Length: 107
Image 1 (spheres, rainbow, N blue to C red):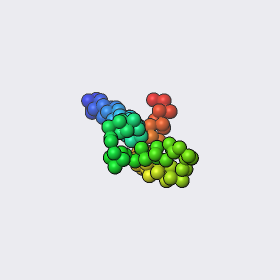
Image 2: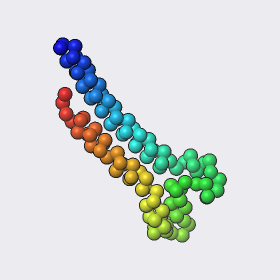
Image 3: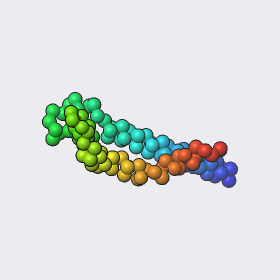
Image 4: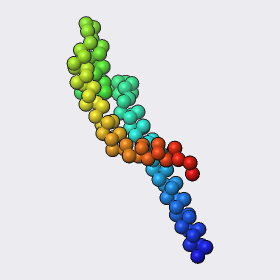
């Protein structure tokens, strides 16, 4: 019976570690996705034509006008660029909340 309780304790510890790892991995994945999605300089350097450039470089065209900034086109181009990041955050929001809740608890 003593070995069974030790085995049960081991499974409980492993489950707690795996849950904490999942929260950390999901958080790191979302942060890495956001970092690479919002990358500006690298695509600007390696692409030569406007057809090959990602959507994040599009609003830069409207913000560097010589006469005035075309705010309506700038905002219209920025909205679709943020949708994948918002969708990923909404998908992973449960893990963020679990991470914040488990970090505030004392063991």
